[in-house]
Amino acid sequence: MDVRVLRVFTGPDGSGGNPLGVVYDGPSVPDSGARQRLAAELGFSETVFVDDPLRGEVDIRTPGGRLAFAGHPLVGVAWLLRQYGHAADVLRPPAGDVPSWTADGVTWIRARASWATGRRLQQYATPAAVDALPAPPPGEGWLYAWSWQDEPAGRVRARGFPRRGDGITEDEATGAAALSLTAERKRDLDIAQGRASRIRTRYEGEGVVALGGRVTEG
Image (cartoon, rainbow, N blue to C red; front, side, top):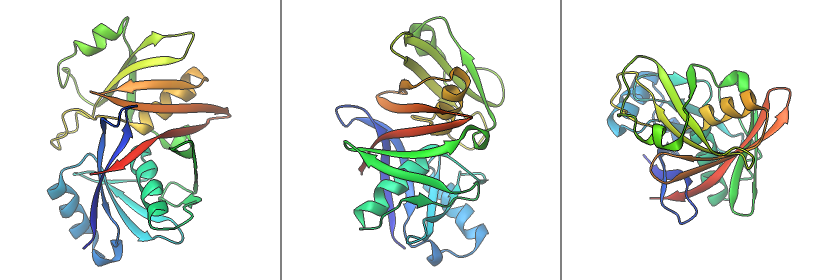
């Protein structure tokens, strides 16, 4: 079994980034139950199984279930496929076809905001208020806490709390939530999330968002 560990949405200096497990030879774990057990054992917020690197077919798992779409796993696996010499122009998670490309060292995907569901976006008055939140805050359900750092420039401070009982207290960088926030605000964003992560987005209209970031292995 070929398991790679990436950090997706790293900061400008290469720090931060959300850890991602990638099972590059996905067919070596054909059983859905075995995949779920492996995802739980690895303990990352998401683990991706690459079922067909030529066609970009992937299966995304959290420690507790399967996802039709998730941002940081798709950005990460697009980057990794290119390291192996694949075009990775289109990824195919269960949600649908996801175009991907690179520009200036940043890996991008394009997706529909309607695929990024189940996260509540809550705005706070200041970045300090976001930073002061306990991990996790009281309550239930996926919470994306955010505040403007510089509203005219589109700079955002954010933290993500899954609160789903699977051992992930705080998500270091959350692509799907960034996509949802971008679609809600209808503008490009530059998001500083977690300890040191950076997510970039571009609003393309009609519920479509480009999501990008830097990726490294290890």
